[in-house]
Structure formats: structure tokens, C-alpha cells
Amino acid sequence: MTRKKVAFYTLGCKLNFSETSTIARSFQDEGFDRVDFEEVADMYVINTCSVTDNADKQFKQVVKKALKLNEKAFVAAVGCYAQLKPEELAAVDGVDLVLGATEKFKITDYINDLSKNDMGEVHSCEIAEADFYVGSYSIGDRTRAFLKVQDGCDYKCTYCTIPLARGISRSDTMENVLKNAAEIATQNIKEIVLTGVNIGDYGKGEFGNKKHEHTFLELVKNLDTVEGIERLRISSIEPNLLKNETIEFVAQSNTFVPHFHIPLQSGSNAILKKMKRRYLRELYVDRVQKIRELMPHACIGVDVIVGFPGETDELFLETYHFLNELDISYLHVFTYSERDNTEAVDMDGVVPMSVRSKRSKMLRGLSVKKRRAFYESQIGSSRTVLFESENKEGYIHGFTENYVKVKAPWNPDLVNTLHQIVLSKIDDDGLVRFEFSSKPAVIQA
Image 1 (cartoon, rainbow, N blue to C red):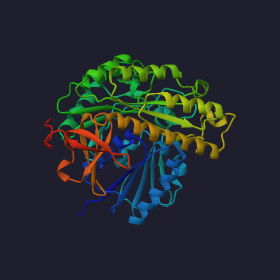
Image 2 (cartoon, one colour):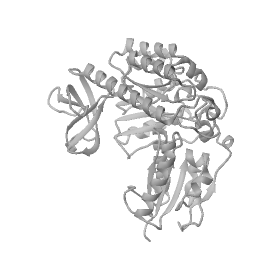
Image 3 (cartoon, rainbow, N blue to C red):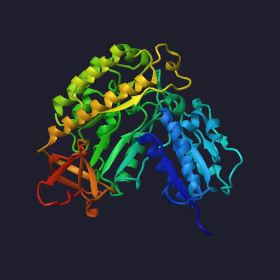
Image 4 (cartoon, rainbow, N blue to C red):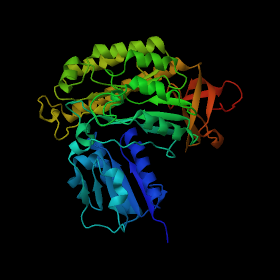
């Protein structure tokens, strides 16, 4: 009997990647062969995102791509968009199955002979039912592993649908996180990235209750003792939850790297209040200054939203100048998009799309400037690079511990290896070339 083939496509964040990988392993346990999404498969699973309008539109393009490869393929949609708008997804031509937040990890229970449906079949829950935790991590998809430690969010930011798509804040048990990290360590993976919706809230709902059993700092300290992992990286963490003690611990840790990604969203206190963020810009400055004091070479990334309702030219310039003066390394710029069932969608002061686009372009330009300045500050320094697996136009790329992207002529022997290098110069494409500080010997684990 021929084994069925399944392929996966992930839209959105690192958390989605970790969950896709876990779902894929459940198919392999059921006797499926996993193939690349570019290949002909019997079934295509699309893990959806709903953070921006663009992610919604991308979904339809991915479905078309799958059906072009095999018009008879069974197509399933899971993830955030599938929870928020299941009927909308089910109506997309060619979609056979839509699973919400609690059903996605049981996807193999919902498939029979993979016959196409006339209409997409929907299995979704009320989001209040998404109150249990399913651990996930990614292996085999890329050089780094994404380890999920937390899910859901109790914050009420006025622009965000994530609490509606993923439910309340809840955490994996400390024991299970450490077990998963140890499993990853056996797979010759050099770096783990911690991921979740609001990872600084780790410990809440660890055993199904509301209180914190552990803190994020305790999680970090415990993970630092796992043998066999060269690098641990904290993904996005809220500024109000990034405590001085955590920054101090990372500064002296052997495995946690000097890289922080801290959402700001606006440099205007007036807009932060309208967004119902849990801090003001002064606290953000304190976080950045603390990191710079202990780790001058650290990379600091920032999320920022442009075009939020009520963002006047003056308030936008307040954000621009705030970021321009802040000692950060790069920006992730998001153009505000209206989302159903959020407070912001009904707010006055709607910013025209043309203005949103112009502001986004300005901040993206600032990001290029910031990243260039950060890279220039690293020239001449000795760093450790972890090489990725892709051959991009004859070059291999990698990242240093402090997230400088480097390039070298393609050499397959370098894939998934750590090397001590000296950053030498910035190329025309903005990436850093380097020299090996000695002969290119692999740093042994």
C-alpha cells in the first residue's frame, strides 16, 4: 500500500512554525510521508495567521498554489485565521477542512480517505474552550528550533485579535519545557528560540490555574542548565515583563545570547494609552538603557505600528524621533489594519491608507539606517556565527550570537556549524563579510 504524502505551509510567527512541526510529526506517526510544499502531495495543511490583512490574502494564494500542484489534493486550514473566521476559510474554493484552536492538534482524527468535499467542513470551538496547553517545538525545518513555552494572552490591546484566536494566557509545565529542550539537544540543533504569544507571562496557567507557578526568570535559569544546547534566544518579550533580573542573567549566561526583541508599537504615550499597552515610553527607554549598560554589543529589535486611529502627523513624528534617538538595532514595521471585533476598529481619527503607507516607508528607511549603524559598530569584533542551510545565489548565510547577518561563499560543510569569526566589512547588500579569526575550525559542542 502506497503511503500518503502530506505537505505543510506556515503563515505568520515562530509560534506557528513550532506548532506546524508538531502537527507534522503527528502525521508521520500515522504513517504519512512529509514532503516539501513545492512537491505533489495527497494533502496540504496550511497553518494560518490573522495578524494583518496581508496574511489573510496570502492564504488564498497558498491554496491556489497547492491545487496547482495537485487539483485533487485534500486541503486543510488550521491556526489563528481558522479560529477567527472558519466559515470564510471554508468558503474558499478547494478548502476541505477547517480546524479551530482546540482541534488543530487532533487533525489526524478528522481525516478519512482524503476525498475532496463540496464545501469546507468546519470544526471550531468557542475560544473560551481553548484553556488547555499543547506543547510544541520545531525540528528538522531549519537550523534553529522554535520551542513553544506559552500560549494565549490576557492583555486587551485594542488592535489585537490574538486573544480571540488563541485564548487565555497559559504555560507549559517547567518539566515539559526542559524535557522538550533536552529532546531538541539530541537532534544536533545548535540554537533554540523560545516562543509563545506572551512569553514574559510564562508560569501563568502552568497547571490549569490562573496563578503563576514559576516566573520567566526561573524558566530562563533552568533552560540555561540543559546540556547540549549551544545557544538560547529569547523571541519577542513585552517591555513591562522584561525585568532587570532577566537582563542581568542573560548578560552573564553562557548560552542565552545578547539579542532582545521588544515590542514598542508607538513612541507616543497618547497612542500607547489608546492601544491599552501596559507601559509608557519612559519604561521602554529604561529597558534599552539597562541592556546597553550590561551588553553594549547586544542587538535590540523593535516592533512598531504606524497609522493607528488618532495618530496625527505630530504623534507619528513623536514616534519617529523617539526611535531615531534610541540606541536600537532594527525595526519591524507594521501598518495598522482594521480587525473585526477589536476596540480600535470603532475609534475616530482613521488614518488614510496613503498616509499609513508613507509613514511605514519612513520607518522602514529608519530601520535600514539603524541596522547599518549597528553592523558598523560590530566591524572588527570577534563573534560566533551559526551557518544556515540554504544556498542563496552562491552564498551561505548565518547569524552571530548578537544577530548580525553574515555571508560567505557557499560551502555545504559549513551548514549547521558554529565558527569563531572576525567581522570585516559590510557588502553592498548590507550583509557583513568576515574572516575566520584562525583557520575555520568548527567550534565543538
